[in-house]
Length: 117
Image (cartoon, rainbow, N blue to C red; front, side, top):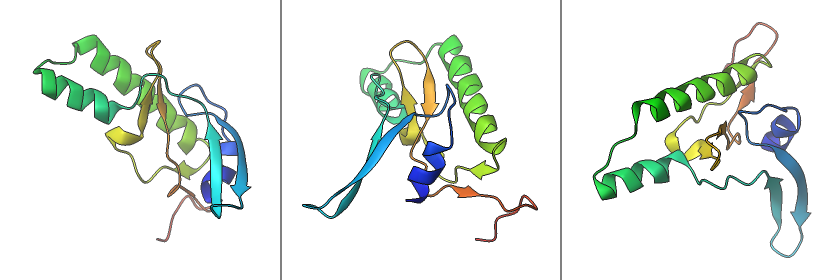
């Protein structure tokens, strides 16, 4: 529910979009419907480059870094700390857009900007 609450509060080009959430009685699961990342995630792209012994182009690295930074800034502007940044949580669009996702361990900082966990 924490992830649903946080995702629903964010509308940013560099954070994966929240669509809706529902509880599936048959599996006793909370299901979250999010924007589809048609390019997969950064972890799999890294593994693909390793498998084929290829490298990222420098412009791809800069593009990714800039977009990730913009996504982190949009969260921090709302006092949200992601707390699980890793390549598997960086989602890719085929158009080159990069979005932060998997906010299930994120926290909203208290009024003094601190987390006590």
